[in-house]
Length: 119
Length: 110
Image (cartoon, rainbow over the protein chains, first blue to last red):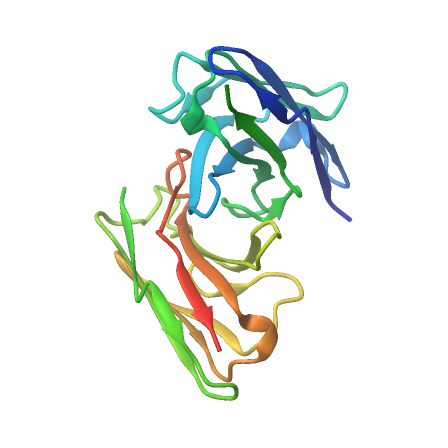
């Protein structure tokens, strides 16, 4: 069965950095486009970033462009999110998610990792 | 693309139907001819779970009391008979563009 396991969350101060990881299993990772989606406490879902199956294209939400970098290591079946210059408004649960085998959009989700930005 | 859900809150009665609307500011028809409008369900403290993809297709393991319909810019999720486990927040999302967007969420409570 498909499993996506995020890690790397924690509490950091404004302006600091954090790197999230998402380990995938149960899918042929190098054929799937991968996304990060976040959810601030008590709020809705916000799409963050996407990376093509081969890493050839990346897109970001306006709110994180220039501060966050999405990447992947297909040899390790792992997705990453490097987060720099963190702000209080980046506080959220971060989910990695991917498409279905023959459709786009949120078929599989990890359990999420909590990132808290606080001084 | 902005998705607007109505209602934002829906008190329901067990065994009764429920319906949620999702309207898009632009057509969600992809260049491949498919419409990637999906519905997710999220229980408190849990990640979202896919219910419906491409407007009307139930994902693996989703009960048949859930159904989706619509076309173009107007879409609807229906629950034929609400069960206790159906409480939570429902989101529509579009994946026609790789930069996904989500509706605000509709909270369903008994």
